[in-house]
Length: 264
Ligand code: NAP
Image 1 (spheres, rainbow, N blue to C red):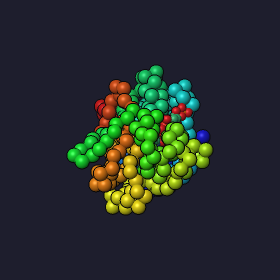
Image 2 (image 1 turned 180 degrees about the vertical axis):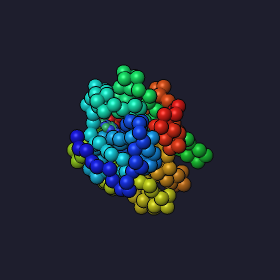
Image 3 (image 1 turned 90 degrees about the vertical axis):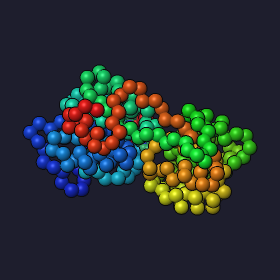
Image 4 (image 1 turned 135 degrees about the horizontal axis):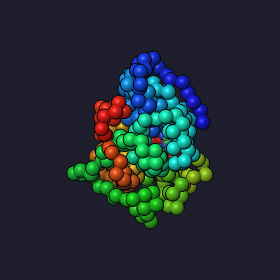
């Protein structure tokens, strides 16, 4: 596990008894929250990243990087570092760490809240095939060869090796493992946000016939969905996993309120 010092402008001076908060991150929202939390003397927060991206963007909070070692490791980390609460600001599809946070916080009786993005909803003109996971997404592409824009992140691409008849344009922040790529795949590396005009131009230029996306919600990657609508291209949409009864905060203000000790 690596530890990095706080970056950027100096955080606010600590209050007498600041609340120790662990923010589970890896999202734009978590970074925005880290910036706000760094300015609140009532909170002594640490941001935790999985370490999936080799060069994560800098934040203004002390940041720890790497897995904890399951529920047990997370529980130990929370207890040893005397955390008072946990805010789960991970991606809606990061189901394992969220489940671990639920179990660890229940065991330690620590308050836990999830900073949730509302999922995208299909609207007039959208042609979505909603599926539960990547395996179902593969099946939904069908037997006939198609030009597929695969935008589910690098970790899920291996599932599509089972459908080698398609041509894949794969977009991810960092390159997928070469051994996990489907046979006919081109990789473009990019980090959102993406502009609608660029998404339309890219899909037109590559003759894309179907988009595969996670229903991640939020504005940063929504342009591909709007582009598919504009071009009348179907979207195979992987539904987010269920949250299971954790308190939800829906805005950065509500998240800060939770961190300083308010109700979620
Ligand atoms: P995951 O399947 O839920 O987690 C896998 C393991 O990674 C966890 O068991 C945990 O390891 C470690 N981990 C995950 N998030 C962590 C965090 N914030 N701090 C410390 N350890 C963490 O997660 P994932 O889908 O691989 O996503 C990994 C990270 O990328 C998350 O932080 C998420 O916010 C971000 N992300 C994910 C997606 C996506 O589509 N899944 C998209 C954008 C960003 P231990 O069990 O060893 O503690």
